[in-house]
Image 1 (cartoon, one colour):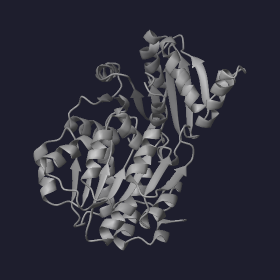
Image 2 (spheres, one colour):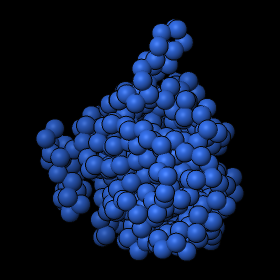
Image 3 (cartoon, rainbow, N blue to C red):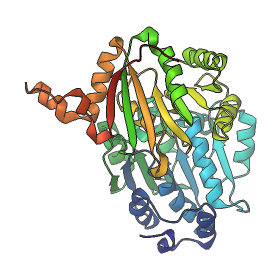
Image 4 (cartoon, helix red, strand yellow):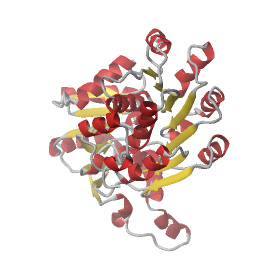
Length: 395
């Protein structure tokens, strides 16, 4: 499909897409949208930054516009991802759309959400925990929710939402269309699909265990106590917006404060912030009111800020797969990006797990007793990678 006109969409939706400057569908959109429009259940996997949200948002909005009955529910693991999804939905629906929506997430006042639900929304976007809260208190009804989207399903299961998901499914009609998108397909997702999906169509675009080829990756071998000075040097050397990933919430706040002291506009994003504060931080980052965002892995998935030019792994992720998701915060929509990881002696085990994920062939060579490839040439599927030690003098 060369352009969105070929999908035969509702005129109001086609007008929204033109206004949003959506011209040519991405591969995941080209494969998933026609299947979804025909009513198929879908299991989709794709690299981050490939246009996955629109792949389910467009058929969802098309159904709401062409069918006067029925409700659509979108479940997402985090508030930030949920807000991005809702923003796209509102753009697709258009400012004058009569279709009401509800955004149901933790960390926001119940009163506001109760007001949205009393208005009988036909589109609900939310996190599993808060959705369950409303179902159990009787303030939300899903008896006519015949369109379900599970986004970042593997992340929801990693966060322990399986029980909540199964409870939500019980409130929904058995006859429904379900679209499940995930970065990976572990056994628990396959089990979930067998229980709650009907003959799903598989849509897979690219390899999911590689970093996009348009991201240049660098690695600094460094002592732990020298990381901050190296970070200052890297920020001086690089231009454009930067996201720095760090391990703890306290560490994120402290680093943002230190960077402001050292002359860099910076703020922190983590799970302990009130929702209003998180929204304010993200709004200021999107509008480039500050340059450096210090974040925990709450920002590793779903965060779509096109102007992020650099990702810096100050601390390596606890889970190897999150390395790929962190990398996906740059080089969005085909742009180029750069990333650098600080690897100390204490990080050896984590870095080895990341290398095994990115280059399983090398890990197989090692286990078979054959010499592994030189570390400088590893992980080529994830883009160019350079290794060097920290500079002797940092700026």
